[in-house]
Image (cartoon, rainbow over all chains, first blue to last red; front, side, top):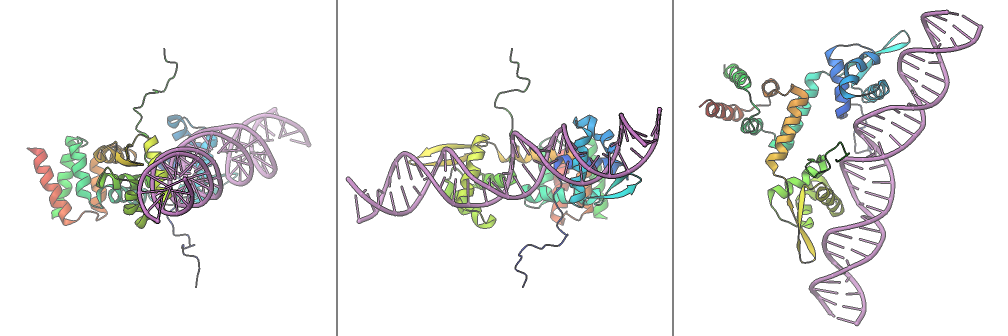
Length: 133
Length: 133
DNA sequence: CGTAGTCGATTACGTGTGTAAACGATGGAG
DNA sequence: CTCCATCGTTTACACACGTAATCGACTACG
């Protein structure tokens, strides 16, 4: 009997931190790219140094969120998880934590907080129409 | 002239962590209550000890997210920030980070992920009707 | 062929977080 | 009056995160 209560396999979706997420966004935007390329896209806005990006990339590789592919002396990095999947679990987490897993209260909240533009409303109406078909 | 560039006043909304959030939920559900009461509500589900709850309460008090009121030898705790406010900033954070600040893509994502029940859809339709008035 | 630049890897370090034990005051039971 | 249960406070400690400098290897230029 495995006395290990936690599953030791590699299926745990290892949480991605805020800073790491910025790096992922760069990779989702275009990949595979080098660490320097990633820096070019995020170092400016976030005020980071290349070293920081390298660290974040390493951690993402360790978390198996990013894959490496050798290209001469350096590596090319690409996401190993789809943006849709990430966005999905994060959204789900929020809805679960704050709205009891129901999406309607979230929507109600956004509406009440004036977080919905005219365009949002129109788009959502269109989506609803589609859902009802 | 204040040479401090960061505003030193008490208006910073101090992030609330995941574990702390669980305590807040207990307080939002009913307050003011004692630390032991909080534990009664969260220690079981989360597998915490009373000591843990005490620590979290202290940290929340330090973050000015929770107020204390003496009651004999012990304290009664109550939330200092409204659940609506917390939910609002957290939702906003997510929408900003993942959906470029637009609510419609979030909605689209939930729809696509089958995260919407029939009831959700109906409720949202009703809300939309109201918004359009 | 040596040297400077660049790469990923290793190490660093302060702060936040999860989780809790130890401690000192104090109030109530006997 | 004494002792025990119970408070809140203090201290602890491992791990995650943000941010980066340093190091050893390697390559390309001169």
